[in-house]
Image 1 (cartoon, helix red, strand yellow):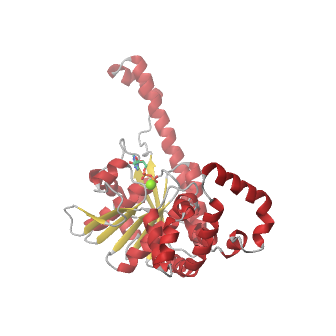
Image 2 (cartoon, protein in one colour; image 1 turned 90 degrees about the vertical axis):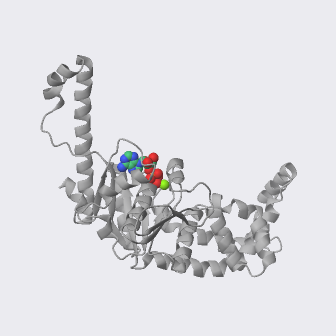
Image 3 (cartoon, helix red, strand yellow; image 1 turned 180 degrees about the vertical axis):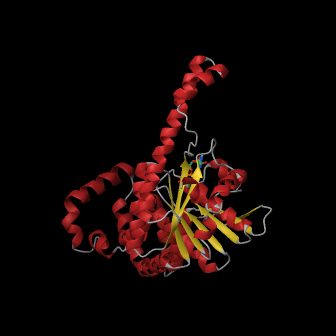
Length: 368
Ligand SMILES: Nc1ncnc2c1ncn2[C@@H]1O[C@H](COP(=O)(O)OP(=O)(O)O)[C@@H](O)[C@H]1O
Ligand SMILES: [Mg+2]
């Protein structure tokens, strides 16, 4: 099937998957494809390769979508997500006074938060998605997801971040006036005061202030993260799982597919990217080595023949791995295959090349 069929009528498309499989490239390609189909589409990318970013006009992080110049019926917008600014926006929304907002924003622990706490980058991507969706300005938003170690980190992010920020239990230990701190005071107290002496930084003060201030925005944050999660579960949203045809990546997609089902989150299909194309010739390297030798030097001919055999083996392996995915999905329909190109996808031309596969009618049939 074509990606256009898999995402038809959806206003939010989330491209998820393991690191390095082609999420960013696929997200940008899909948004471009939808713009070419007359929609106003935006891609929220996380970590575009520099050349791709440049070609989309994303030289700087400004955390707002910018229109990409394009000769198309629809519009393509692109933005590079800045997790920190998005987080600042959340603080700004829920702080009760401008003073406490400023104190949070200037807090040393807070400044490190968006880098230090697992899940905050993922969560902020969803947060931004929610914000743009609420604006109602786009027909379709395509969300690229951060390069997580495990694709599931993305789905668990709201919960994890929320648990961290929901500081009531922690502040119990942090607030110096409460009895709780005494439990820890010997060891940690010494550590903190040693740190303070050496670095001049009163971490204990910062920590305690941080958790106390965050208690204030915690309720608002909880409500918001519920709304964000609901957007992901909404039938107007769909997840496309991006993967390579390698066995471990396929395993991860199968696992992710099951997790989506458990969470009742909508699954649209899987993009298998960088597939070694099927070798349709029957011949083996050995059969052609003599013919090749007429054209090439003998040593090179042997090399080329071996290379041909290797490629066929890779292609067969890809097909076997993909069969496992087809078994899991119960059908070939939700699969879209993109071949391994001989060069990177780094500009609009490359994205268009990708789209000849993503948006090809009956795309998965190439494996059949
Ligand atoms: N089908 C493909 N053939 C060749 N190179 C590709 C293909 N798809 C993606 N790439 C390249 O692979 C690299 C990683 O892709 P990217 O989309 O950034 O992955 P991710 O976002 O999942 O980490 C990029 O340099 C990209 O240009
Ligand atoms: Mg990426």
